[in-house]
Image (cartoon, rainbow, N blue to C red; front, side):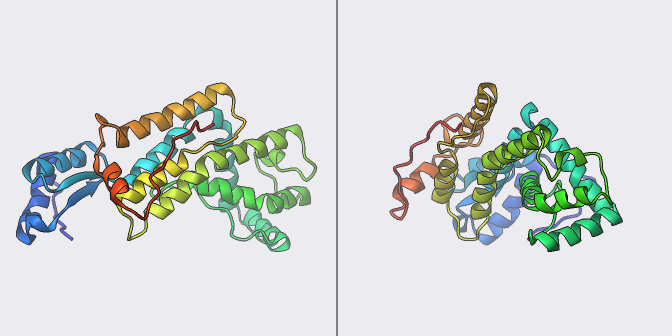
Length: 267
């Protein structure tokens, strides 16, 4: 691993390429098959420049970052805005209140709901989805806390013991959100394995694009499909910013994979 104190230098694509090529040439260009990074302007350019200098070194985008960005696009939809606000507020309240934390811990033990609430972070992938799943599994415990009356918070009205229209709509939308986003989290987890190859990226991505019966409004369906089509085009279609034919080629050449992949309407 190369580390360099370079706070006074401009980290351009050329700078990054030169840093990488120093070691690539020392080790031997013939020992490298690809360079991989996220897709910031400088790192993306650096990959292109490395490939330009040594065509045998393919430019490969980080599929996990790409999936996370796909998930972020869906999370930003106006349809999920209120849901995300409730999730953030609920998790933040229980994490910051000693009384709330103690009450919830006891309720979780009573209902055996498993692991507790997970905060929405900025550095880990798909944390909003994981947080939503944590709220869903903890629903019985949160409802008990609200029913006990010892702890109240801004979003208590969404967690009554006896279901209301408001709580029904919240739980319904929570299920929808998890149904559309949790497959991304599962695929991403698989693609973080050490022995993943380019064929796996192609197969896992298309396994996510399968037909689902989610009762979204038509405009939301169109928005989700637009996001998926855009992200698919970037990665797998000629002319896409992150396109590399190696994904399809390795899938075709890998006899252990089923290449009969059909992309279906998502919603």
